[in-house]
Image (cartoon, rainbow, N blue to C red; front, side):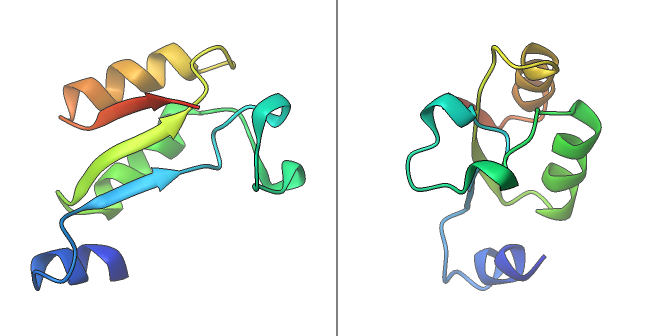
Length: 83
């Protein structure tokens, strides 16, 4: 919600959610214990909390719930980045 306010004010162009729905096998700088499968209900909550400011979400489509989350993001006009 804080980031959406900054977007509404023109301080940010939009929100890119990077994690927690990424693969622990390719987590980079992310802490593996904080990662989880992309549950479409959780993805929807984040997109709704962004109040139209969500532009991109990085997630692992091969994880359980991944493809359904990609479909949800596409329907919401949010770019699904593979991560």
